[in-house]
Length: 604
Image (cartoon, rainbow, N blue to C red):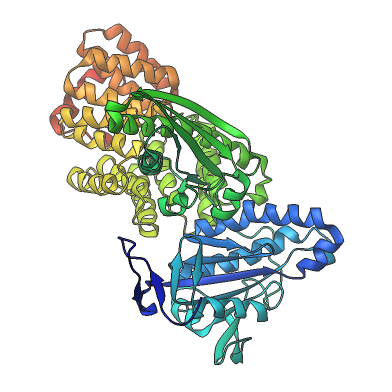
């Protein structure tokens, strides 16, 4: 690129106009440059093995970690990569974690065959384009990487100054150093990795492992005979709806659109975007008819793990987009959850990170068996210990306490309620923009603390952030039921169920719909949904209580007593006097429910 001006064609294409270089937009970014040490030597000794192992590190470790710290891989350079971050703190934490994990992963190999990286970090205003970044600060990051020791990280004084108040670091001052092809010196520091006396030291394989949630990219759908922009437009709705899958990172639309005219190589997309899954599709128009196909691929294996086809009329284009986005998401969610759970369970316990532990804990939690539920609580605590900054681990731990209380297994209602509130607040503190965490806090506030007004405000915030989160909609229906506003409760419970009809925890959603119909006085409807919930999981105590109340309201007391006995099998210590302290319904409705539960044979 020359040093004069850029020549740009005006919209009419009839003449040229000069634009000063200063007009180019710049953004403050942290830049990570990384390179494999001795790559030529490694490939000469074992070319295919080196390539395969390096690719495995990129797909399974490097790219997901960068995405998890909200970074973006700008480009891979064969034996290295360049990544950018909006936050210098994220960049430093990500870089240190990458070095530690690569060192641990490569330790089993002979010293002369190990893949090791040197890394450099800098921060400053750079020119950001979809497929590359430019500027003097990018060059500094690259030159700092070149002077870093194997398995080490060298950073500029500018980046160290930004992160020192927030990250516990130990670094050796290298002073002002002269870097290749730069006229001025750069003050640099060599970071010491945690748990070691010097940068290249190894890390214990049993050290806590931060969460690495899976990620997905939705590429523009290919169009045949249809408006080419329709294929791009449909991914907007899908990306928004994918926010309802808890724990799944979704690559931005801007990054995905760079593949609008490229041949799609699943492996390459996985490497470049750092994603585990890629959703692709096509749009075919014949007359007024549209046929849309979609498929989900695992970037590691290249296997298609799900596919589907949708037909519709061009006249209902926007409605069709919305329906397809919703169907795709609730079809994908169970597949992704099952794949991630299997992936986690295949790992040795010492290799599980916080995300893996949460997946395992949630699977056990929703079985509602006392033994498995207790194990789930211990696993979720391990997830918190593995990553003290992982909001989802705290959110699910708070939800664990909610179920622990509602199932009647608590021995101290007040203490466990306060612990649930503490964990819910900790989740929101760690990620205020996590709609699921906010919804859990709202649920705890409404149900356990009985502060319904504050709960409604928190639910509104959660849904503003995550309008596609099925669980947030469902749980928010509860607080309106508690206040007797059954119309809103029904609307929200039904919307939550529509957003996630294939969820493995659908019985939990159905219990809220049963409650809403009970409060609404539509007891026959309450029975339909309550019995359906019992068929999916016969151990959810809340659902059985709403069923008992509805049956007694209909005069079917013998049937209610049968459900009451099922409740006592799961919760043998159930007493109406104790449940009166927990029941979140408005006082008049609470008294009526307690009377009906007594008629169902439940003890005082």
